[in-house]
Length: 296
Length: 225
Image (tube, rainbow over all chains, first blue to last red; front, side):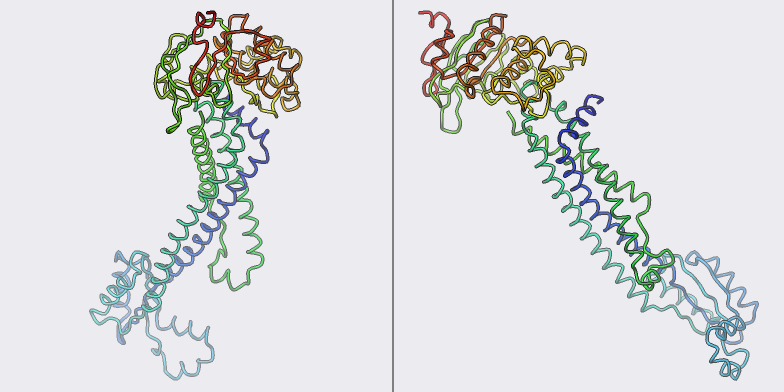
């Protein structure tokens, strides 16, 4: 192993340009994959935010006592579908309304104390936010006559669900194409890099080197090129991310949520580097083996 | 040392070698000769395992090498030295590194390599040139480096495929003198060449091939007769 490492360093020193081309192509492939991961990650965060925002407003029917309302709250809080329940009294609703829309103050006063009904604002767990899950939950609330109206924005949920499904299909298809393109790009380049060193392989074969002896330094070189390519890709993605964040119109970070456009998670960065090493090692291994199989 | 029995080699429907039987004794020096396309290089390729015979049996130092699989080839090649017309050196590496490669692949320690390489360079007349880059050497010097690499492991057999083909007259003579000296140290040497002048100047048994057939010199006795 020590010898393979030494030979790999010598190979990189002797063929700095070729090694740079190999690392550069790995970096290009990983930039594609990293950018894709970043876009999908941010879109998923947006969609998760939408899912978290799905909530049911259950307005109490007129005449429900505070005890009944409190009991309804406790009962709902204990249900498995429910993430949280907030009890909004008629007075709180009135205050909220007047704070945000002061123009309607005269109208609200005219309608009197009970103009805005008390309600329960129910947030559901993500597993229950499908249109069917919401329908079933709303239907269960309608029984018993405690609630006069139930609002849960079914159309919005349906649209966001359809969007998410399309996104998933597109993501898988695009991700697959990118992976194949990246492997093709790296594979062909490393093939050329190995071909440029065919004399070395041929001589090693002639003096009695075993295939594993010949292959080991190339694998180490592939790993080093993978780490270098991965590092370069992460650095480039970070620079582009900073540039994009600095130039984004203010409205776009709002649409993306509080965090704005997020960079890759640390685990994704590690995964990118590991992928770089795997691509480098696999491409070098395949190219050298293919070449050796053609050699005498 | 080398015994071939009814060796044939075909590429598709073209016969490169036909029914070749020959013996080369230990410590002998022989020429493999004949016109272009007669089968000289094919003969040597069979001996160092770059090609497999289509028919026949081939023994080198008592081992049947006609059926060696690719995993057994390295051990055969560690006991053979091979020299080519185009030298096959790595120009960006030093003379010592080029020669030392053959020792590294057999797992020789760096100290042993440092001791052995200058000794072999001395044999081929390149003493003190260890740190020169192979790429800057003359043709004759490159061929000497190639010969040094071929003999650094003390192989029993040295195969040289047109070793003087790229060299002018004086350098060709120098290279032949080195091969002769190596033979005198006990190594069996086979030289593929069609240079009649050199063969006349350094007279050894000639294995003459025509159209893939061995027409002269199959055994030492036959050659003497």
